[in-house]
Amino acid sequence: PTWDDFEGRGVWRYNAALPFEVGVSLPEGATPLHTVPRLESDIGVETLRIKHEGMNPTGSFKDRGMTVGVRVAKELGVGRLACASTGNTSAALAAYGARGGMETLVLLPSGKVAAGKIAQAALHDARILEVDGNFDSCLDIVQDLAARGEVYLLNSLNPFRLEGQKTIGLEILEEFHEDYGTYPDRIVLPVGNAGNTSALYKAFRELVQSGALDAEDVPKLTGVQAEGAAPMVEAIENGWDETRRWDEVETIATAIRIGNPVNAPKALPGIRETGGTAVAVSDDEITEAQRDLAAEGVGVEPASAASVAGLRKLRENGTIDEDEQVVCLTTGHLLKDPDAAFAAGNEPESVPNDTDAVLEHLAE
Ligand code: F0G
Image 1 (cartoon, helix red, strand yellow):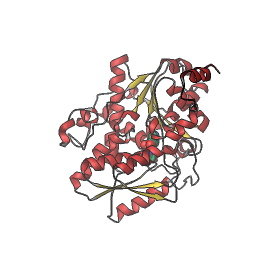
Image 2 (cartoon, protein in one colour):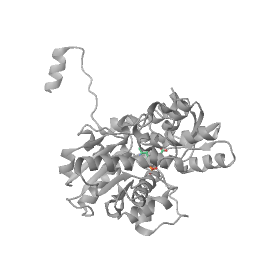
Image 3 (tube, protein in one colour):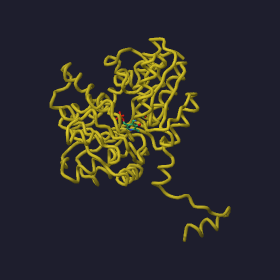
Image 4 (cartoon, protein in one colour):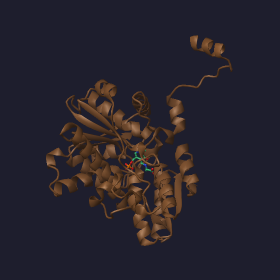
């Protein structure tokens, strides 16, 4: 296969907004914008749609960034690609690195990465280093390795990653407009390193600058974090202090278990200037939202459910009005974190190998 197999599909449909016409592709993008009628009326907003980025090739939005980032790496002829990761970036890097025929190295916080994500990195042949520290320490180390010329960095500090992730915003606006003739008032998304928030803001700025979108039609970017890892929420409330870093972070949503969001300087203006906000939710609220989405047939990992948990909270406290049209971003697939799904869902029941006994069990 050649790179241009997927020209004009998914992410690459928007190549006018990207640095190349084609990428190292699987292909990625063109994810569903689900309706969720019961959840919409339960939360109480005029429109709720779910942009399910878990439907990308490796099961998260990271693929949109990697298709561009790995293409750049190919272009540069670098030998070894690397990232620090809470899991999804490593899965995407391993897959896209493999597709591009390059060596990959991933640094993961030991014991804090969901099983599905490590399985992907392993099978796609990444070299996996489990660091005795959190994600932020992994990112410090991989930045050092990059500075010493040992690896090409493919975390969201790499601006080409964010170029690809802009297409989430472009797809949402295009599809929403086709369905309603308007643009969503608000996009609610989980925030970890704040790369996606920065990417969406850049996409909207470019649309406004090119005259394709009126400034007043830019959706309010609304970030959601877990209570145990909420430096961006703190920054929105108290101002950004770049020396302040959360050393202790904990949440069931391991994907966003991040204390020092490196893209904060780019993402905070996006939240403020679009009129959005940031909110923290508890692990219980995240699990509840994961069940709510599952009840509509939409299977997501905990970090993704944070967006819906945040929307519910902001609706309940009156920050969001009932007449708003909202898109929640769900960033990763349910199968990424099977343990969280087992913990949140039904227990399997053991039954004898006999129909009557099964019926008896069901009647109990
Ligand atoms: N949701 C999921 C499922 C993620 O994996 C991440 C980030 C985020 C949300 C937050 O996105 O960093 O752009 O604000 N995961 C990274 C990783 C850190 O290593 O996979 P962000």
